[in-house]
Length: 77
View 1 (spheres, rainbow, N blue to C red):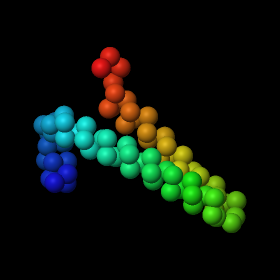
View 2: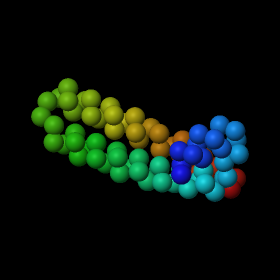
View 3: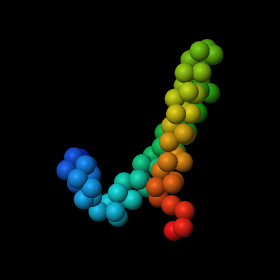
View 4: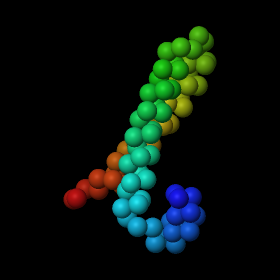
């Protein structure tokens, strides 16, 4: 369903706000758990280069979270 909405309604700006918020909420929760999985991966890797690469991926995921929060909870709401 999301593919249909995101390929037609989203580019046209006609996606219902509640559908967009629901997607963002699910994405936000997924990103938190995805970042945790990378943290676990870092703890299990053996070499520093591997740990750095996994930590960089985790940081990239964590850096997406503020954007989702700003979209879900705009100032003044």
